[in-house]
Image 1 (cartoon, rainbow, N blue to C red):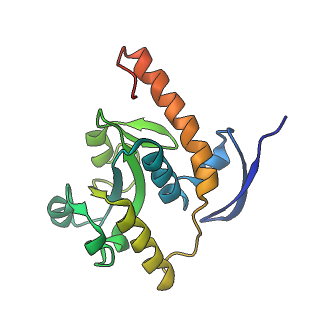
Image 2: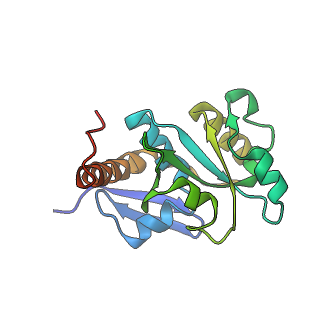
Image 3: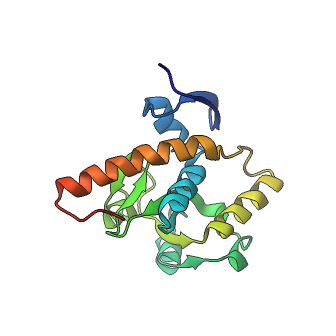
Length: 175
């Protein structure tokens, strides 16, 4: 029996994703337009911090100054979102988690998972992320609505994978 389907807007247009079906289309959706929804869904399910990947390619000094910053609601519209590339959740062990699974934070920062080179990783309050997204949408920089129902479905898959990986490593349960 097929699961519930979701219409998702991505950088290349509409996709239809099926609940609990981790496909290439799902990976594309959550790395090209829907990552904010997924990081928010992971945060809502776990209360883990949200981490934003910011890049100002060719400006390592900016990245060094920005890396480690914490973005609050007061910072939501100060321009940081202009450099936004991706958002993830950060587990208690420090792993960065997105649709592709767990990533080592230092490897991620040094460009192991993307072609952007080094980047700045900042923690972002969920309210600040939503305000920055709304501001970017209002200014025409972002046109995609985030599909939170679909993201919650995929967050469940990722959290089950996370728990299996923790068990494999002999780590205690999250709860």
